[in-house]
Length: 321
Image 1: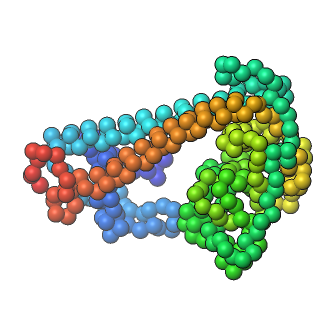
Image 2: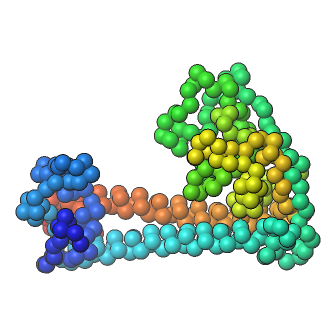
Image 3: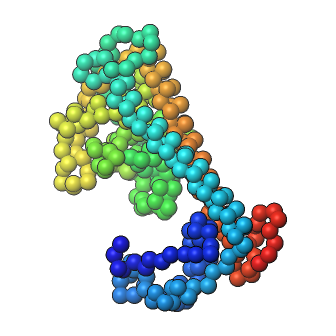
């Protein structure tokens, strides 16, 4: 490692316990009082000798071992849910490629009992652009269309309001199950995300977005289809990045002429349900991971001694400072 780092060995202490202790904030006050950010704002400055004089509070070796083991098991469980989530995301990515028809008219993998060609239609055959605007300022909940999180409230996404409240009369109304195309491109959305409003309320969106409703098609199926790359070639051939490198430019009329392939309604329902269940399981592992991370954060605060010499929460049988 670079000589900019301080490297040290330890003895007479459980290494995993000390590693976990440094994930707490119990030592931060010492650093604040004895160092500074130095000449570079991104680098903390403290002398090695001062750092090594840091006071720390440690319990008996037996209690150290027990604490270390508890946090190791907690970390392993967090990692297990993270890895399971990644596996399911890889599975979903593979199935999105295999279970939706492209040029051939047949997907590579199908549910048993389905063999008919998928029919090609234009997006305009099963959808209509929405022109409804917030002219009377009836709606005040501003939404955004995120490539990663779908359609969410702007305040939740940015932690603040971005839209000018005095100029939202020109925003489009987005009711539940309306679809929205966001032309902003990113690593997650090469041509911009297309998502469905699954919130239990109507909101409004900037007129930079294209809002459309659908009919004669399973909404969840279409939503999943737009998570595939089957429509990317059309976008590449019929649009461009425009004046702004982060925004894809395509005419609304051209976008609505997009060709898509769809199976029977029965097969649409079955595909939609399968991916909904997969998404629910992914979300379940993500939520479980977040819960465990919150639990770990709380335990790090409660199970390590501060000024008093006693942690607020301890394993049964331990009471010494």
